[in-house]
Length: 151
Image 1 (spheres, rainbow, N blue to C red):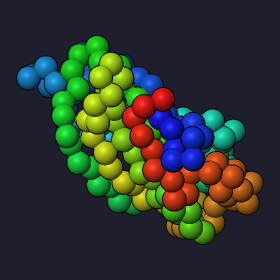
Image 2 (image 1 turned 60 degrees about the vertical axis):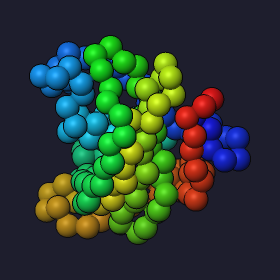
Image 3 (image 1 turned 90 degrees about the vertical axis):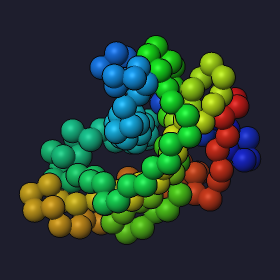
Image 4 (image 1 turned 135 degrees about the horizontal axis):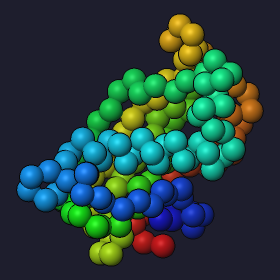
């Protein structure tokens, strides 16, 4: 995936396993949310922030709201590319635009937006995003860019 300016946008690759499918042989709709959650986690990891370490520092990220649109089904053994583009960065929250593409034919399968809140692990009250993490998120360069399926 490339951002509009030609910079490589973040994407996590995964494969559809039997456990991800429903009785009809397609990915069960809620599993797209799991794929997107994993991509957001890997996005943070790519920036040098591991969620287990953040939790040890009394900081968690929780989904405040989610929106998803489904376009086409993924099936067993499909390889997927899941983007995690940061489109909004606030004091204690960030918004992700995410897309799930089937790799072999560059078909958009699902897309969504997620507002993720930063909270204290001990009481789940809003917490400002730590300065180092905020700087890394801002420097990641996603804000305001569109991503595309092709490399």
